Length: 342
Image (cartoon, rainbow, N blue to C red):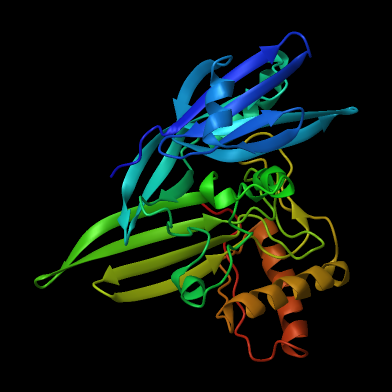
């Protein structure tokens, strides 16, 4: 069985009550979801058929990412976000992995002007860097987890669960999200078939970009007060061979210091420290503590250059590394990722 456009979407504007509602139905399921006046309600098959008589059908979808919500003054604006188009990048175990190529944002108050406000968000989601998994069994691979965490039965890793907040409305309305919603990660996935003698294996590289300090390359750099760094990526190299799994995980991220790279043109982005060594120490400490807690002992590699701003960052980083090494991190060999990741 292959993934198809199994989500049917209907909408209706009720003049007598001045309300707008959307009906979301899945093929081969006896239930549907009704979105109306900020409430999500589960309908049985009889209620669904009765509703559909008064509703107009919209284009079908491959899946649902959830509800995007924000406030405009005193008004709460909600969008039902659907996957309109996606491409398969390969199969792993019992799941198929898809890259999202087009989404549809449906305003739940039927205001055409609302769509203008989310064009940039839609552009990001349609950029080809978001992935989800699907299985005909209904239980698909959790892409937010590396195989080590998955093997120990860990819950989804919220750092890489990019549409987590879009599931909140469903939780608040007691709707079982796993029956209706997809989980997406941001990053890159490559899947290849590998032959080992007469055996056939699957080789995968999965890069997961953290959502904790997201932003464009030169606008979001370094760390924040919580110890989250920009461009933090967990890259997993995994091989599936019969009932055996081999997984190797590496991490990278921006230098855990407070610095900026102001400028509009490439080449004019000079490094500028926004806080001194002592002021950066608490966040530096938090970042390393988080890494150790999640990944265990680390070998940290400094890939900074030796020119101008990079040299200044490298010196400050080394100074803090020595301070930490003399206190609570004496068992670490210090490392850090490049200044400008590709």
